[in-house]
Amino acid sequence: MTVTAPAPSGSLLGARAGGSRQLKNLTAMVLVYLSFGVALVPLIWLLWSVLSKGLHAVTRNGWFTHSQRNLTYRDPGGGAYHAILGTLEQVALCTVIAVPISLLVAVYLVEYGSGWLARTTTFMVDILTGIPSIVAALFIYAVFINTLGDQRAGWLVSLALVMLMIPVIVRTTEEMLKLVPNELREASYALGIPKWKTILRVVVPTALTGILTGIILGIARVAGETAPLLILVGYAPGINGNLFGGFQASLPSMINAETLNLNSGGTYGLVNGKVQLIHNYAVDRVWGAALTLIVIVMALNLIARLIARFSKVEQ
Image (cartoon, rainbow, N blue to C red):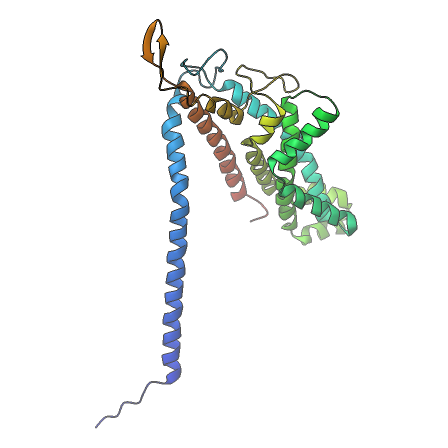
């Protein structure tokens, strides 16, 4: 007669604990994938809607070479050249102003920052991070238009966008500079190289690709802002390349201007002396401008991702 010894109680508890952990792991993984799928549905829906409704306008002849001057919602044709030009000019001026300031602030906070001045600077950057774009626009309006008597123009939009871009670049540059190994700094100091030259020749070049990623993300952050455009510059359907005079178009303001005509179509009116159903071409222009803006922002984000993959700091 064979007697089988009972299994140790510890192994049974271990098996039960292992099964419980696997069940919890499987449950968490299912919930993560489910949440990802739920979040992906509206994104895909949005991209498909804009692409399907705006592709015709973007691929139409003249979209990138013509403006909307002297065109109404009844008139076909026209393009978004004036809006693209305005967006690029306003963002370019904002970048020229914001990037040097942001880099200097980040270098100060990481390499020199200590005491009350560094704490105050960090606190102010945190405040700028949470400021809504409309508050930045109202501040610029109060200072330059109400107080100094300037006229609404595209360069004021750039000043408002600067306040939104600076915290993005400062925070990204800070993190990239902190990732630079201290051994590189110490080796440079050991060779008798002063601190400012070490920062300029060693620290910044090492973190350069990460810094460029932050700059591009900052540009993408401000490219689609609408509130500063509505407050600080009027919409012009014609081409105006002067940032310092007159109304100037941009892609967000073009979308806003065309939405005023969205309810004008679908009615009957006189066309060449005949009563016909009026087609509302403003709808096509709204979707086309939205698709163009999405493509620009998406391209900037993709460039930032590609640069980040080759970051020397991450390697």
